[in-house]
Image 1 (spheres, rainbow, N blue to C red):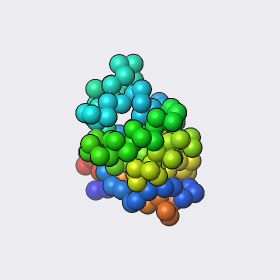
Image 2: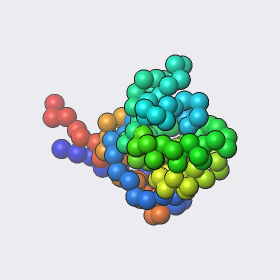
Image 3: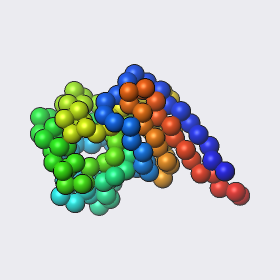
Length: 142
């Protein structure tokens, strides 16, 4: 049995994307939190330290970082270590620029709050142009 939740907001950027969610109530910096060679969160004080975010739909409270984000996201895509998509509570223009350059799905300011509506392990479908995220959660039979 499954349960589907739909989140809506203004249009995002990038292609449609699907994947398994990895949710973290902290910010994300492509430069300081992430090893773009391995796809793993590398900052020891980050709650997701040691976990791979490659190919996942990652959900973070906010984005952090400056101009290096753009070329780093492009490099992550080239190496195959980039997440399938980014969902933020709120992001910044530099992260959006990086997603556009690298052609990666990115959305923010969705309702309901993605950090409350999405759980790690949920199946997520992003449709950035439509401003829609569908979250499918498997329910246990117990």
